[in-house]
Image 1: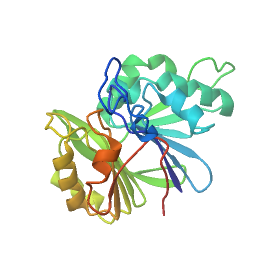
Image 2: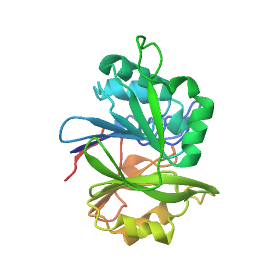
Image 3: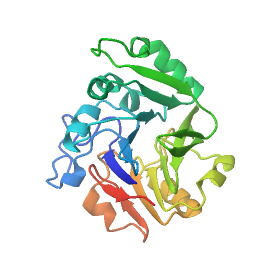
Length: 254
């Protein structure tokens, strides 16, 4: 199984429009961050997306992703959801309905805002053909057991995801104690790290590293970063077993 990190940027992406800071002007491609999303390629070649942000088309072209078999949604904010219409390309290629999974609030929001895309397969494929599933317990998709991880994003209840010994936690401000037990024995962890300064709906660098220490995954990667974080500067300061994620990072998962 392989993880393809599609984007590690925050809602504004990096470079930020109109910004002339060192990170935004950097020539390092690892400082070019599209909005946060990842893809899991299963042993049989199926693709499970995590979120569909507004850059999903560009990311899919860049990484040569030609199919999507399921989507796991963390929450409903625009930088994680609003590329949903671009799933129509995969429906057209595969001529099949794509299942979506999220917590009840996320599925209600998708149904309200993108109800036109929730439909059964028919003769025409000019729109997405999707089916939404609200989940609160582990479930099977593409032959993998997927475990929803309840976390907090400010006042909002959102989801992280675990498949095998990999977990994905973006846009978190708190991991409830009841969810920490679902994060034991990880080989790979991708975790939110918005910036250096505290934020009311995201963990900052200090808080992210504290959670990394508690979870004790074999290897952790920081994601969902603003332009305040320069890859070359911070990468040199991180402890062993922690690295900055970047767009296009590929990891083999056990």
